[in-house]
View (cartoon, rainbow, N blue to C red):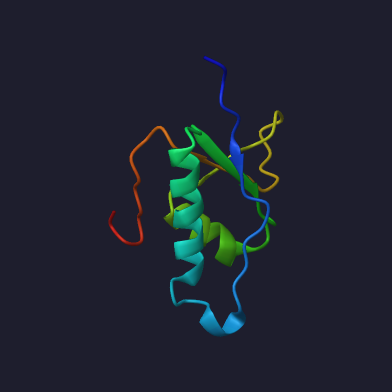
Amino acid sequence: EPDVPPFGVLAIGTDPGVRGSGAGRALMLDAEARARARGHETMNLVVHTDNQRAVRFYEQLGWVRHPDATGTWTGEMRLDLTKPRVDAARGG
């Protein structure tokens, strides 16, 4: 059985008028559901390290910072799809 490559998220954005409404969360959960349905074991994305709002958003959805080979975090984040969904912000 060949290894399934990670599922990458290139970009996500919402209109400023709907921020905080759950639209971004719904987009990310849909992407996660699609990745799980296709048998992916991980998802990854890159976020600007100074975009703390986005970093917190992803971390609340269970994403973790993934440092480079030198131990420096340059914005790469990963989500382990082999684990059950844990959402710190929403309790599930």
